Length: 193
Picture 1 (tube, rainbow, N blue to C red):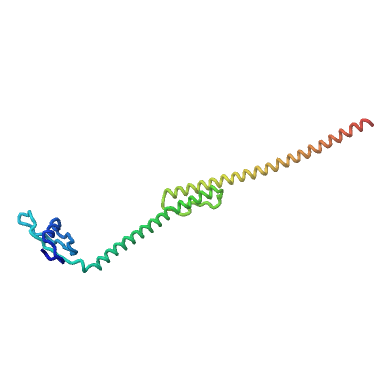
Picture 2: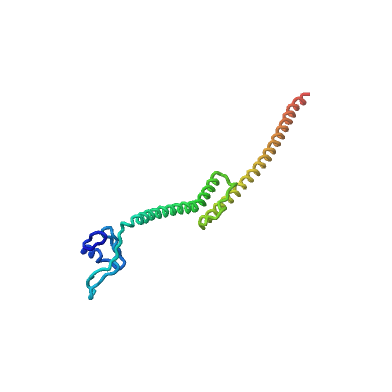
């Protein structure tokens, strides 16, 4: 037996260390056994022994806890950083799209006065091009609506003029009809006298 913090069978130790290379660590009976180098036979066919460094891990429980909790803390911190990064990246990516949706809804509701989809650059060429297209569409719709309003005003004015002319014509026709009726009534009376 070899004393390595606790009684360990030498054959078990050789068996565990046989596949190790210089610098590999093997834990045996709660002790850290580091195989620093092996002593090989002259024909390099077998290992004759090892030069070992051993240290008890029992004295390092505080360090082990620190490493364990530090790893857990680093993992949680990493998850938090990734989550915040994804949130802010997602917000930055969806803000211009949300603005375009709002603009499209305003256009659909007929509000063409406060349209400006491309006020700020999104950083994405495709979204910027889409915003510029929505702005052009809104301007074209504003021009069309203004044209229809002007045409409606012109038609309304023309309609008033036609109504006035028809009213004058009707008035003239009424006057002529009254004059004809008067003359027709006056003619038979004059013919008797």
